Amino acid sequence: MARMVHSRRPARMSLVDPKLADEVTLMAGDSDAGERAAASGRSANGLDDDDLPRGTVLSRYVILQRIGAGGMGVVYAAYDPQLDRRVALKLLSSARSVDTRGRSRMLREAQSMARLTHPNVVAVHDIGVVEGRTFIAMEYVEGCTIKAWLRAAPRTWRAVLRVYVAAGRGLVAAHAVGLVHRDFKPDNVMIADDADALASRVLVTDFGLAREHESLDGMLRSGEIDIAEGSRTGTFAGTPAYMAPEQFAGAGGDPRSDQFSFCVALYEGLFGERPFAGDNYAALADSVMSGRTAPPSRTSGVPWRIRNAVLRGLRADPAQRHASMAELLAVLEHDPYRVHKIAGVAIGLAVMFGGATLSPLLFDPERRRCEHGAAAIDEVWNDARSETIAAAFAATDVPLADQRWGLAAPELAAHVDAWRAMYVDACLATHARGEQSGERLDARMRCLQDDRARMDALLGELEAPDAELIDRVSRAVAGLPDVEDCRDPDLRAFVAVDPDDEERVARARLALATAKARNDAGRYAVGVASTDEAFAELGELELPWLRADIGVTR
Image (cartoon, rainbow, N blue to C red; front, top):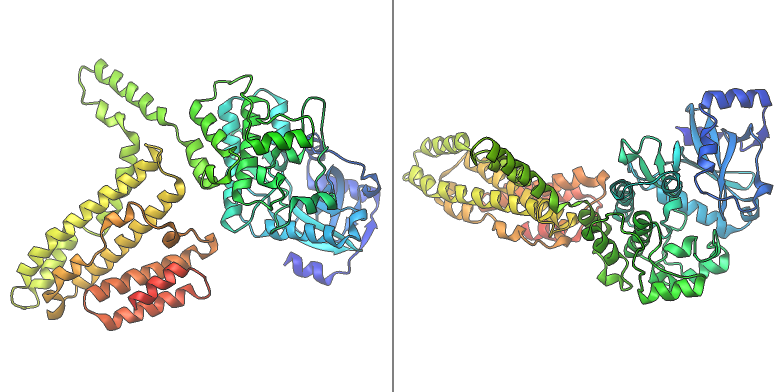
């Protein structure tokens, strides 16, 4: 609705009465928030000609104060009277307004961020052009950048890790929709004032370099990267300090480049210094491209598992880094010592109470959690359902019907036991043993969900048996997929999809599982109807492996 109103209103830039501006400021809330944001480490770099006085109206937004600036424009705190909220308004500099490259970049930034709806990514509310000046209205965050947060007070390695893992989830979300940030650094991550209590209020912003296939040389020629920004004696600051080797080589970068930048920033947060030495661009590029990391002067108690995970993300060869940001986060979040600590407590309590019966209860909490999840199969197969099917078979008066069910039921029970064991193994591989990425865990779980859905559908067919189904019941049960296939499934067959499409894909997978079960039961006509339903659910979604599976089943 806001965009519709904006499109109908004539674009204007004016100055309202100063008294009204003060009243607007009061309506918007605490006017000191902008000063705190300005103290976050974002630098103004000579864009005074773009300073807009408080009270200026840009489209429907009332300027409150300037809170930062960059090479492409200025950021203001502004008030949106239509929705009664404060926003961060990014305005393309007047020098760039006539530059179609600059305007296109800002539009790309808005479009990139608008494609993301995630608690760890700053939201884009609106975009428009006023008197030739492009602007983006974004979520206003009360807080500071990671850079300012680290400088404000000493931080434990656990606090630093918690904040960066939250930011990493924002990158995972970006990568899931095909975006690469290309400029991840501490200055491009905001921390809300309540982040110490709620790490989800860590937000990645400034997706201005999230674009497709543009070389570093081109960006340098256009002035979009200032290699000397923030430089000081004996160090190298600014965007190049966080760039991956392939970006120095002129490549456009990919999610593994974001991973490298993330690890540079995390290393700096954990150890108080960057991993690569270099007093100037050439020296820094040489260090980064050769993969020469300097050992930290202080360890701050950071565990070796964390240090090794970060160093792997800093390898010069992208193929040697973690397979994805999701996999890196899984390693960073996994604490193999937590179970051992709980085990120690359990043993101590067992000794105190004079027996060992207490220790198994506390010794392996991850296994208990995984076994609890595996209990979902009990909703599909249980004694009550087995008895229902047995009664249905007996009621048909088909000769030997009850004996045939008596042979098939143990096979189903064995399949359920194998399913349960595979679920626990998949869960423990990530959450206890730390040998499996979150991405692979998701694929294994989707595989098991498909198996569970197919079993449920087959049991539904068996609840209404006819003579043909009774005759082939053993073959139908044998047709269930081997759960061993879910030990190492092809990731392409269980690729993650956009959250907005998850329900559609889930319905398509359920229809496919039903089709397979009906085919196993010999009910091919209704099986075809289920495959048609699966295709209809997919619509225009391009999931080649799933489409191929549906086609083969049909």
